[in-house]
Image (cartoon, rainbow, N blue to C red; front, side, top):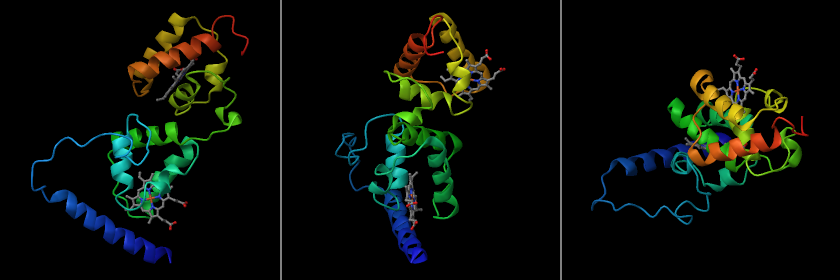
Length: 187
Ligand code: HEC
Ligand code: HEC
């Protein structure tokens, strides 16, 4: 049954790929990038990449009805390639897709935030920092805003952290200096 599904999906995928290659009859206007066009996928960096990569084979519902932590999305992307015939993405594109999935379709429960207290920016901190190391490294600090600011720059410049966009960086910095400042009670 699974194999038959796979065959059907693959044929659909090939047909779609063909459609993409055939140039449109009239030069295409910029498509409306609204919620309707993306079947309700929330706005954010990576939305287009997720939508177009993942709907090549199946409904977006296969994706947006899931909730799981980053590591499981990571594994799922491998599964799509290894078992379901998805074309491997460029590493940068894969990271983009993974960030989007982990940010918008991550676990919803409080206890899944690894002890980070609730607050604006928690999600951003969680996904930006636990990509490489335990959040314990973050939670044991009590740093001034300047130190957190420098730490973020250091993570990007020396430790290969993907640069956060301006809005996310501001949220992360605000969250860290609020909850893990010099006299924070969360430590
Ligand atoms: C080349 C085809 C193909 C592409 C592209 C593809 N998938 Fe899939 N996907 C499948 C098939 C086939 C299944 C059904 C597998 C099965 O029957 O268990 C599936 C199932 C899934 C499931 C359900 C898995 C489960 O355990 O029930 C999820 C979630 C999923 N895909 C996510 C994605 C995401 C996210 C992307 C885009 C990054 C993607 N898929 C792109 C072929 C594809
Ligand atoms: C791409 C990987 C990566 C990401 C993402 C990352 N870090 Fe790090 N981080 C590291 C590495 C590697 C070290 C250890 C560096 C060392 O000790 O030389 C580290 C160490 C740290 C330390 C300990 C510094 C010390 O004094 O020992 C802090 C604090 C820290 N990271 C904060 C963060 C925060 C906050 C985030 C999220 C906004 C983050 N990191 C995201 C790789 C990363």
